[in-house]
Amino acid sequence: MTLDVADIELEATLAKRRYRFAAYFIDVTLFGIVYMAVSYYAWYTLLPFTPAARADPTWLERVHSYLNTYADDPLWPVQLAMDIIFGLYFYLSHVLWGQTLGKWVCHIKVVSHGGLLPTTKRVGMRAALFPYLGTVPYIGIPFYFVDTLWIFRDSRRRCLHDVLTGTIVIDIRSRVSRSTGSRIFANIAVFLIGFTVILATATLIILRLWHWLSPADFAW
Image 1 (cartoon, rainbow, N blue to C red):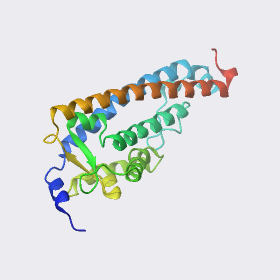
Image 2: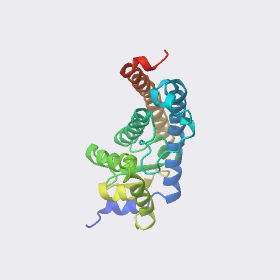
Image 3: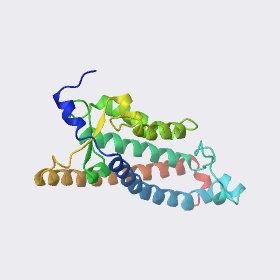
């Protein structure tokens, strides 16, 4: 494959590996806070009333399987729902802006060849590979490590999901003007508000569905 002028320019602005890891750390940390809050509510509000919990008084001390975290988790529907929402966060962010909140903070962006935003198909494939494939029992953890470490062997600093979907991550700090930064901030603010509303609604639906499935097992 030959590179056109736009691709050659992009080669000069490839995002540094440390910025990619920093962006991912920000996204995971923010989502992890939400995840822990939901999990805490579910574990201490719903789980103590389930038959499995009453039969196993040491349920808080169980160690989950490393390769299949769903297997020993009596609240696996909550965990699965949060994983799905986490994937949607990456998908919608990249479709709309080419950036997650972490990438926006680090001034990096996902693009296709020529510097254009990736198509919805490419973004969908990207989300299917990362983060969704990383949550699949048994194969997820090995793929996650291979996907992450691929960035050190690829000359264009791409993870494996970038290679498979034809995307790269570039540094845009030299392209960001004050007005552009303001628009991005406004878009991010709107996104966070909408994301919070969707997350809260989804959580209530999940918890209510859990209650509805076994109404006799809950002391509500």
